[in-house]
Image (cartoon, rainbow, N blue to C red; front, side, top):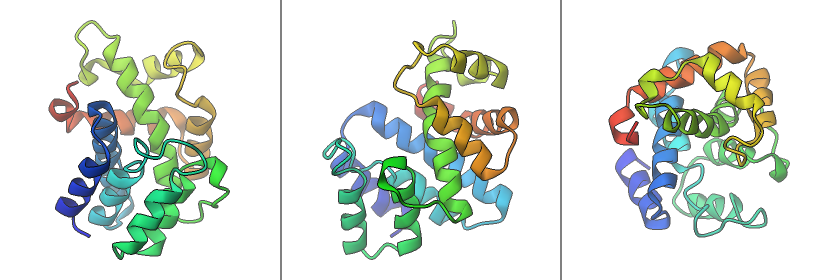
Length: 183
């Protein structure tokens, strides 16, 4: 599956602009990490783009990301990529054994918290967001309450990266598509 086909699949199943922007943010960060780790940026980008493509249609833990995995298998997507997608949700019980899977888990929730942090800044720009301000917002459980802080901390730990450096890396990667994200 190439990027054009993946984006078409995403927008076939996802209509909410916020979910599409989330997918694009995760894609951008996955590509940046692929470059950092010397991995296949196209495959890593696809995993980021498609990790939640089924969520709008199948939002329950009984269905997401399982329905998406079935669809991706039917489309011939490699099992390693599907396993990474399955592993981004702790409740699936799928172990994150590859750097790809660990990276997806580490960036998924964090992109949401960074987006929320940017949106409360006066200019609503990701260029104004720093790792310290994101870490401060992490402490306020009422802020972006749906973002799982444990996933962010555990994701950085599983990936073996310093949390502050990880947050800044994700911010920097998202800045490259700030216009697309409306930030």
